[in-house]
Length: 512
View 1 (cartoon, helix red, strand yellow):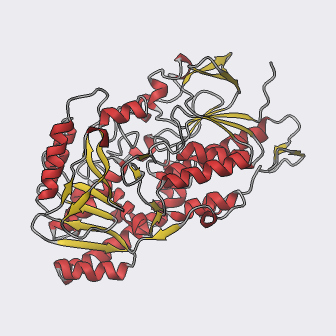
View 2 (cartoon, rainbow, N blue to C red):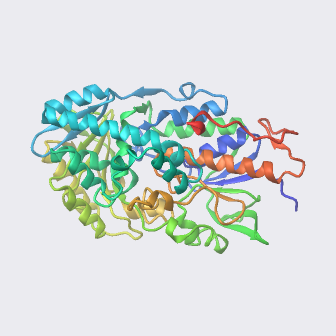
View 3 (cartoon, rainbow, N blue to C red):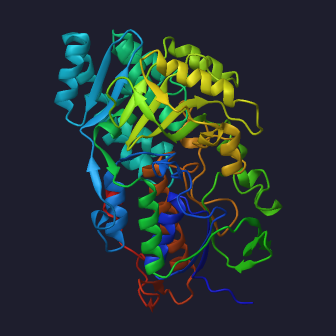
């Protein structure tokens, strides 16, 4: 049977799959999204509570320009589809010595707060750190995050053109070691070291360059009023309006390959979907584990999926609380930071954790504690409940009633939700200077199979996954233009033109 080149199957309706489906449907392709769960969003999920749905994944949007670009590239405006509220306080931080510190969207207010917190020397160190991270972010945005495939040669050339980048990168140092040199107050080194956990790493093993994540957050944090799941719903709605089809509760069994080419996607319910182009929006480790059939096992290298990043224990619940005044983002630090990551490296639940608490309003809370990757269940509920809520009680923060087992998602639960992930929420580990070059890119070794999502370059987090979707869509549209015998290209609306130029002009973000 002749399968139209313009027919694309997207496996997974996480933010990467949704964004790729929207872009390709806008370009006129015949897109079908298959999702094993009952609704879109992937890790951007909610759980029910007596007070309404609780975000149990990402709680805010950073790098807003990535989402502005996504909507603009399909002729829409982000703010027409979701209501955004910028947070003035990026996060409120607490230590067990009784001290606390707010970081603000206004960098001068953050500097003033740090001066009051730790003195004028700490303020100068913070300003110097912020300047370095902004410089590094601007230097590596184009050759790394915006590039479909990071090119070590181009990155090296960029550094050679500006040798002052080298000491700022601290290439031979871990993030924790670099921060100890930059901040004389250990609390500030602990605070900025936590940004390694944003991509599933330990500050004691992650490269110093990950400090630039702090700059991404400092550029602005936005809440989506009503919950982050509304962003997924908005993208799904737009994709449907442009012709994309969504099939939920559809668990994919295998990708059929004949003579080296993809021919169909088979679901466990017996249905099959003819196509020769597939976007996989799942953990790339699932390919190597054979979850999509033996034909995909060699599609990515093992080094692209191993070792694994951190997982988490996530509580999502409603309750009354007493204690210190909470911001939207709150971080309660452990006493000995390295002890937490030593335990995680040994595959154990930490005994001196740092805890993230998101106050979502109306008595709804999400609490996140870092956890090691795990594929199988252990009896952890009681241990985790005692540890988390006794730790918070030491800060004077208490909840009534305490949440029950249904409110907790463990690393093993995440492995079930996102098969073959081992519970790792961020894909491959970011440990090591070359880790950023080890992640799989959108193109795989199997022709017609493309990747998107947080396990794919440029990395974890909803902005990065959304960028990976742009890379996947552009790769497919480029391949269509190259393989069209009549040099025709797809245009919005599903028609074909005689143009041999690029299918779609680059987005604003692609030329940064």
